[in-house]
Length: 139
Image (cartoon, rainbow, N blue to C red; front, side, top):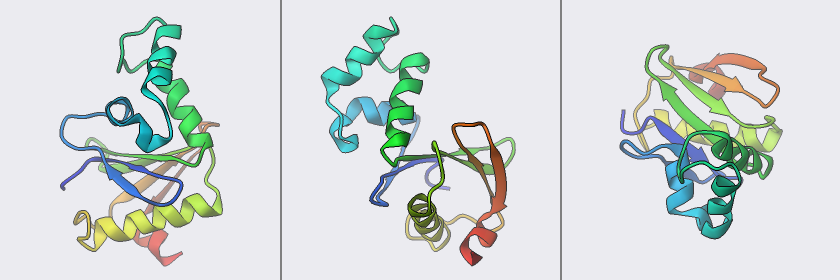
């Protein structure tokens, strides 16, 4: 597996979270990619009195705002051998973008993951749904 984490943009662009980086690291390193300004990102951390890049309340607030703008967070959880896909809601447009991502990680375009791997969908209401990549791709 090349990458264990991704961001999926509202346009369906897939952004790998590489190496030991975390989702918040990419936001802090390239805020313009997410339609943000570095000064605004830093202001959120300052508001919560947290160190820059800290995985706390500021990170949650920033990610919730991105989810509302159509962003999707994806990460692989080794212990349960599942990809967690997270956003505020899973609209038809977001599901189309997730299916595009699933195609690309199973066909070797960005990775080579088995279609038997499960995806756990989490939304802002803490509702959870588990589906295999194979079933997702079948519709």
